[in-house]
Image (cartoon, rainbow, N blue to C red; front, side):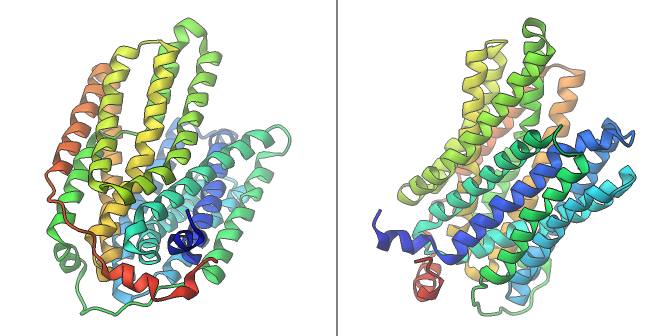
Length: 412
């Protein structure tokens, strides 16, 4: 790729947002890795951890759509991003808590900041590059995000036994502080024309029909797309009788790490492919891969070779879906509605993830693991089918002209 081609997508904002995702994920994944260990010292077991995770995830979902809509309404993304990254950075204050409910309060505030900034960040990213390189931009961001998710737990694991858990939490302040600095001093808002005032409901209903159909497909897929930690749980459970609990746990965590590495590795290449081919079709392949993966777990048994292959598929599929859902959205939505659109997309994903994990967990516990995998396969394949029915349309070109008209945003 020539320098001229590179500068058309690797803008100042793309680099800044990539670094925001890298350091933010590094910080909060570092704290997440240590949280169960530290919580146990307060007598907080599975119930406390489940309450913290559930309440914080719910609070995050509540603010996604509203804050992204609000960023459209005020015509600014940067202030919301700065506050969101600051709230997430405060999770380093876990080091000072004295009771488990304080973890709950801090994690909830941090996750609300995460929920508020995610869709707004995606909107700003889509506004910062030409329309023909959306895939590259979102692929790069996804790769940086996942790299942070690998580095954070690795740091935590390396420091356990060397530093106290409180001191490990304090280290999380460093990447958090870097994100706040980038959000305030490096990131740049994109100029946009304010639209006629609309309520949140009016903003949602005025979104293009093609995008609302995409959200429907995302919702159907999400209802079957359960949390990947359940794949680890299944793997550990099925390997324990033949390999022992310790070896099974190590294999499960190693496969999950392999999954994350592949997620990071394929994000950018998939983005490039999406820019050259058809994002809708590639996203459909990603949806279908998860359905195939679920069917694969039905026959894999305790075969380590097959289990490894399925975790490879899991890493590849999520790299495809993460980049293509957001890049395809940018193709369908005008600048004035980007925030609301990404907020609705994130909300659909959050609700789907919550429902699917609860349903699959129930099926595994009260019916069988096969029932859970069949449920996941059917819903995700239906989501792929719903995606195919969306009429194909050319990407909006207004953003391309605007992005190229401001060379000051170039990284070169």
